[in-house]
Image 1 (cartoon, rainbow, N blue to C red):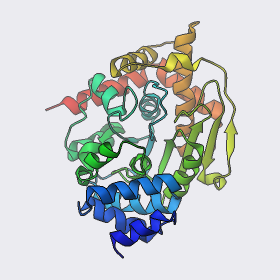
Image 2: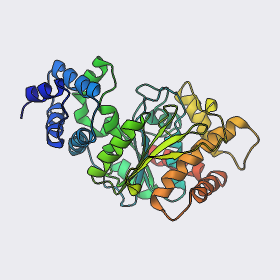
Image 3: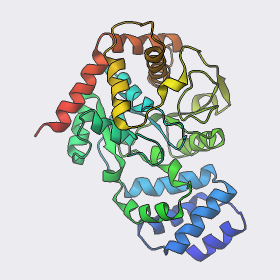
Image 4: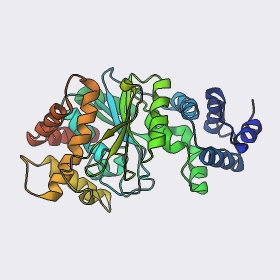
Length: 339
């Protein structure tokens, strides 16, 4: 097996096997590819459309090369692939904090924005969280307060070979789908949002192949990588054998209020929501609150399958209104900045 054979195969729109994909990623992680070879592979994969086998094969090698932390058996991750183009505030980051406030350990894996106005790393930094702490402290956060942020740039050093080439070719590549599947805390349950429903199913299948105990992927009808307020959301759940499920909108808000122009605006929306004590007759605040609630509820259902969606929504709401979500954010801020 060699890279030239891989490129020849992809150039005829043939799919790679798990093993071929893993070999290809190993060469990338070692920095063995020429820029032209990297570009040819990424473009060919994108043109023919990546398979779940290719995603799983490449993700397995990225996992091997990542810096690891000692996770928690019951910890989950809530994240999105990004790339929706909708410029919404950081819903999955806010949901991760709420879910942790409900007593579920969350190892949130994320990065800076690639195409949007605010990535999870950007908004947490704006919220006062130190995102550049050492792995031992990242691990300490998870075990002491049931919430941690794993900054992808710090935990995937071998990406230094691929990052410049990704930027040069300027198109979506398979790397957009690999991040959520390469959590260094080795979570077994997770929610992954993606703006493309076809890839939502492929990522779910790849996650299962990689050993996920339960994985749910969501894709909004408008191209959101979150559950939508005012349009349908497509859901694939490993528990239901990845059959396509359509979640109807609850129509309790307007998605126009979710848009932000900067991490500062995103942080303000999150703080304002976490400062709420009760339901308010304000469409903007209601939209932000309900967006966080419906996404938090799905994450809570990962750990307690006996609870209904309505019960999970109420649990999330209670932990916002009683101040627990804000307290959890303050805990994360304090522990990451402690000398």
